[in-house]
Length: 410
Image 1 (cartoon, rainbow, N blue to C red):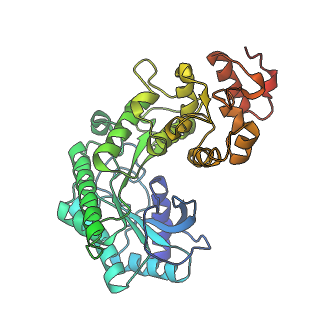
Image 2 (cartoon, rainbow, N blue to C red; image 1 turned 90 degrees about the vertical axis):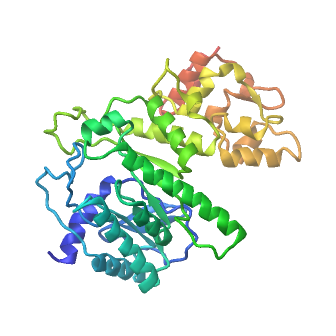
Image 3 (cartoon, rainbow, N blue to C red; image 1 turned 90 degrees about the horizontal axis):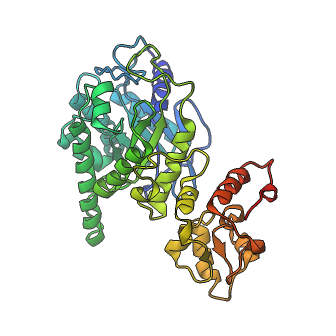
């Protein structure tokens, strides 16, 4: 099989891994401008779009996970890159300005240690022999030795482990070859060594790096019965315990339709995935806690409302917020006010009181915020409302064809 044929197989097999971010790296590289096979677009925290070569080292797998297209029981076309082939492809694409980095994952072929060693060798040869300065993200293989993961972390910008499913029970049911401890152990190792390396470099800039962009993970949503509350509580614990940069959610896609252990869904739960990403953003950027967003009585996110608006309606007694007096933390909790607009409000009100026209220019989304704020004690247009009416207004305001004025607010 030629390298081009392998690329077609292994680039397509990598598309199910969503945790492909390039955030947190300070290495310098070229600028991607085109999109050949195997390249994907990703974004940095400042909104810059970058291109990564996203491939599997191999789709030959010894595991038989029910949800995976590459499971050993499936009759799919198989391929495996050599280390030199991945190194040459990465360098060639980088020199052509196709990519700014490499995202390398793999099915488990031969054994976890063998697979992890091959991936680590790719990173080592790129760094030490080819002097590659671009971004490298390696997926750690659960069950591989900590020595191999440690060595991978010395060469890669990010080393991360996919948690796969939201609970040990679901993992045992759908992926019995994988063990919870084999996933959690490298997560804990990467998180601890990342913190140690960062602390050492603060006192000594020549101290060695270890996965300077940190780690992320991915879990499949909708293949198992866990609630949104369970998923967000797990995400919160991962952020707290292992210093994860981000948890990625992947709506379950039924690629193995004959598998009786999997649910029959009319379509992937993409709206649920979207709401979980919104909730995750609140955890990471808005200082919410998972326990605030959902509880035992309401274990799932409202599909009709974004999670921030849902929280505000459940806590309607805390509103309205006076924008000329509220602190930064409370401004962040107002639907329609984001991180940037909250900072702009704090800066602008130093020169004088703000009104609704100021807020609009600042970037506040007034069609949401108007129900939860006052300016100098005044609502927008003298608006007064109940939680039920506000809920309907927020839902209809997300539909451009229906105007909010049609609602009977009271």
